[in-house]
Image (cartoon, rainbow, N blue to C red; front, side, top):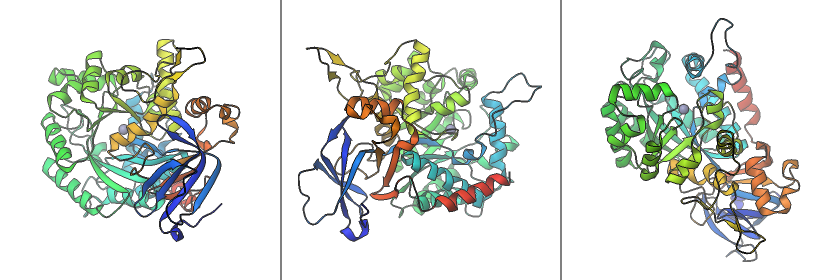
Length: 489
Ligand SMILES: [Zn+2]
């Protein structure tokens, strides 16, 4: 039933079959959203009548969940999907570092218009898969020859415009990138990323924040690229800036063994130890990847209450390694997800790989489950008296929603009054869920561990429905523009 949301005085009540609340599906719940503030006004019993004449939109055979949060993305890398899956016959092998050459070539070729067109298409693909917000780790700053644009934030603003056009919530994580390695200057191929002056970078980040001040669905964060790419002394200043400005602080860390070795060789410290020593590791910090960490580093991350942005579809594509997801959660860290290189854009696949990769490594099943310290959801009572069941799905769904919101510092990720009205509706008649939908726990598990991205039918961001029955008004235009950029490569 189509309801004109604008004509309803800014409020609408959604009445799906089930709602994901507190780590389980609950029936007969209504979610009232305020389309003017973009917030959830009320979550309550469906039988309660809302105050005033608020229109009710019934969503039969739909389950409503918080929208997924993409904590780590580089939109321009969508352009090289499918184009790096080969190696030269003469080379001994391909790895992260050879993939990076292809990625740099794509980065060097893009005009500001192309940056916009690729970002817009990529954001659209994210929305349709159920991501309602994205942390764009943005390091494409300069013109192709390496000189700054007249407007130094030109490309960041193009990305922000793309996000606003399609209606995804954006946290633009502005990246500081000063050198090619701990003891190496920037490479020629890295000239578009360069931010060689710390004060200029901070001023530019503050200016970007001011430019986006009136955008209800955009905000800024600060992100040293990695311990490789910024001088040690800058980490503390960048983190202090994030605290002052109340922004998220993100950094790539320990994605590859070579990066860890370089940090140990230069500083005598592994990356997490270095960040802790520089007072840059706390609950504001998101470590992207954190794949190659020792038990001591896991304890550091947990003690700090930091967030790890895992990007398992990218990590498997690039041969990065397997995240110690269960140990990190057990230590007190939160795990969020990111589509990173865009080799796959599917939040449900990212969350399930957290568990599936652990199974392959440990030769066990149900490695990440409810009932451990710091994990959401209670164990469920089983049929036998006194017995309980520890389920996987609530922890995985929390990684895709609540932990991502924490990483991007958004009041989202759970459905309650006052939270941002960023929602997805799942089709309970989808063939992938048939049979499992008879049981709420089985439904959650089928969704988290089995279902394809197209179970998501409708998407709301800031109280506004941006995807309806998997369609978006900009589908054709955005696809045409993206194809045209790809064809020119
Ligand atoms: Zn990345």
